[in-house]
Image (cartoon, rainbow, N blue to C red; front, side, top):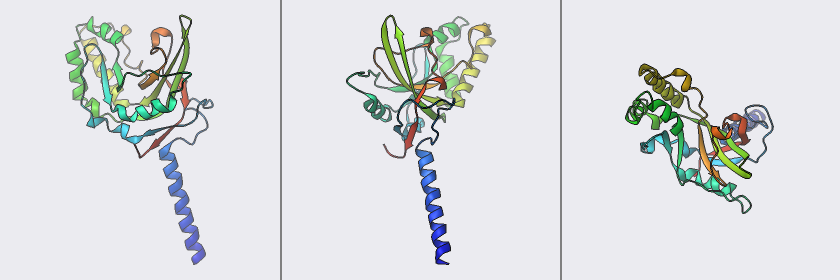
Length: 220
């Protein structure tokens, strides 16, 4: 009887330990695309998920979901080195519509006010999302090495918002070939050495750039 109870207790302990570890970070030795991680695990607080506590911030020519920078700052500090000092914007967000995309939408008379209304209707700040990995790009631009870090996220509601904006764009006579709502790689920029990198630099910030697994903790 005692032996059975001991086995049960140990089994429960192992299960709880397993659950705590899996909530803290991935056990996989490979990225979501099946290649080995290049970096060590990076820790971040799960409180970054509390985006509904952050006010929506309208912008002149782009749309984003605002996040609390205090939970990104420790990641920046952990990555910062004297060899590759990182610059940051001092804030955190997930871009949903970029300035170049807005320029295309605006040609069909889609206004930023209409975009913001769609974002509000779909409760952008209450969007559930899942952090997938820490991404890293190292790309030479005009003979200078640009290094950029970001956290890749999966956020279906943000894709839904883009699709709603697409429908408005087409309804207003926009050319559907010029704006693809599914050409979307949501991420949280963490920092960069010289400047950020974009598609115009030939860079795609999807799971292809996963560099380090994330350990998501319950602590700040």
